[in-house]
Length: 371
Image (cartoon, rainbow, N blue to C red):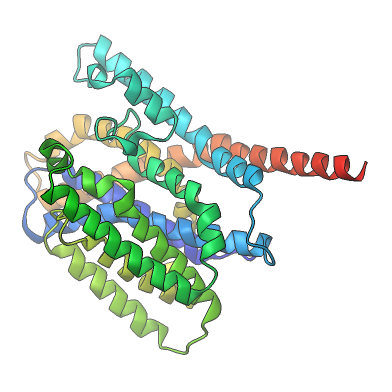
């Protein structure tokens, strides 16, 4: 299968934004454009969603070139073994961490977790209920959204077969989901306290258009060979992302800014796809993208430790901006080291196991039919 390094580089940029956001959130002294810029790094999650949708449709089209029917057992088995081993490992580590901090009398949120929240975390359904949203695995809401998207793949793959259909469905669903958000707020269909914690941003209908943008991007990339200046597109998309990043960060159901981010990311991704050997596709970014899932899951704990041991001391005598970038560099560096190990020891074996199981099953089914 063709290796598309720009996709891994995009994951690298996505995880940089996510880690930067969580560092910025630890520094209450940040304000102005720097605060906005730091908080909007969270849109890296939406970039992950776009890359995920693109990658899935790219892979499915190569595997089922002349069919719109997916081998569901194979598809879901491979998806499960891609995310579950590392996610469940993170669940165990964070659970032990919370228990230890609780026993030591340190700050702990262990008492906030119910049985239903734990079960929703393990079943990747935490985003379905605002009570479960912030699960025992930090950032688990995005994994839950990703899994819900997987459930729609068989339908989407049958219905969306070209760019025009994808574009129409993306626009229609975006408008529909926006109207749904507005209706929920105006009709007070959920408790106000959940609106205050921005549950409507996290819930699946609000994120579905982002995945559809990724699918639309895939079909445009595949079907259209329009000649344009890639460097101009790169600069324009980066300027748009920067403009969106330094302006207001507060989520408003009436104005789905994350969808505009999604369009900007798709343009940025398109420019990178045509500049395969550019600086922005550097091998370091490709490596970071490769281990980005592990970095995503481990960096929360690393940041908590760095915050307690270092940040609170630095903030007293070093300018805030310097503290931001120093703590970001330390947190990212330590997270990458751990993530590289976990990728080799947990993620890769999980991926290989998924392939082996589905391959053996396919062989067994084929033998039973011929026998």
